[in-house]
Length: 240
Ligand SMILES: NC(=O)c1ccc[n+]([C@@H]2O[C@H](COP(=O)([O-])OP(=O)(O)OC[C@H]3O[C@@H](n4cnc5c(N)ncnc54)[C@H](OP(=O)(O)O)[C@@H]3O)[C@@H](O)[C@H]2O)c1
Image (cartoon, rainbow, N blue to C red; front, side, top):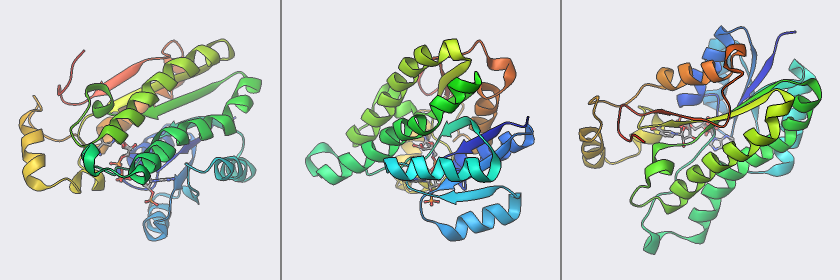
């Protein structure tokens, strides 16, 4: 049976590239998004991939959204937790809402999506989770205590769930991208971005397709022995 994949935040940026890469592998893909209907409609028309709107930070919305995907496309075998936001600022200027919203969506979304889909994968004896972390979750970043904490949490979440899934044929891995040329990075002031690129050994930003290639491998049948790992795709910016 053809496997079904959900990519959260799958209608633009890195998520769009992931949706396309998984479709190319022969999977049936559902692309989730938060609210940009115009981009989602254009994406679906362009790619033939169904898009589904819900907030991954909302627990019940994830349960309902995943049920809707399963009704339309079939049982969910693969989840790529890619949806993420930034609300940057130094601690002194960061509001509780900035902290909470980033934790709720970036980290809470992984929990909500796993709650909605893990049990079905366990019953069918096969599953793949790929959680998109960040180099800033590994190394920290000035002005991002919320984002770095949430992304670092994703790496811990990945290793813990990998231990629960292993005996059921479910692998759980993370990818930690460096700076990639999407709308999220376009929001970084030019002079700050220039300094960041100067510290990337390969001397450029990454491309969404380069992250998607890593996700595609981790979602493949051949990656069944890879679990609990974090793949860094960052142009050499951070190595350990
Ligand atoms: N770009 C980078 O340099 C970089 C580096 C490291 C890690 N990452 C991570 O990679 C992931 C993708 O980043 P990106 O740069 O492609 O982001 P992006 O261009 O800003 O796109 C974000 C996507 O996530 C969706 N989204 C946001 N909040 C959501 C929510 N509450 N529920 C469901 N979907 C939601 C958006 O939907 P709408 O279109 O409806 O808004 C959009 O599809 C993020 O987790 C990010 O933290 C990015």
